[in-house]
Image (cartoon, rainbow, N blue to C red):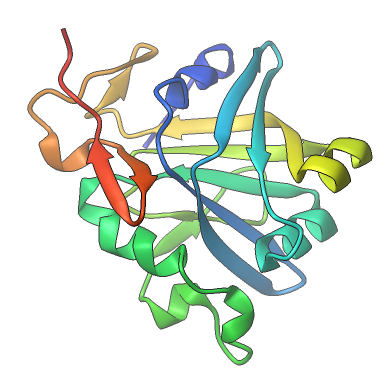
Length: 184
């Protein structure tokens, strides 16, 4: 994992990958799959993410004010399906990380954990926009730290050729995923 220049952090999301949103507050943590995540601005870098009001993740990120965006790869599709199909509330004495043996590591700027073996990570701080959050479930956040696996992202660009197992994934519907295609 190496740092990504914040003015280039938007490039981590530009190709529309499925993401994992991680959150933590007061000793509790959660992870959920999210496809509606988008780069919004360059400097300071901002993102948007849609998080339904009924989710446990939403409860934690609103309480903490931060969250992480993790970009999983092809080898993690089964894990993405699992965490995207059940609520963290279904594990009152545990959490999805423990239940599904998901390895994490500490973020640099926020309390939410980062998921090991992903290919990129964005640490985000919510910019409070109550109308958007309550009406559209839309959160705007500033990216305060960004990191990527230098095998597939360096000098501000993705380069997956030769690393098919590290390609990001895209949920297209009904549990079907595509992998990021070849460069031309």
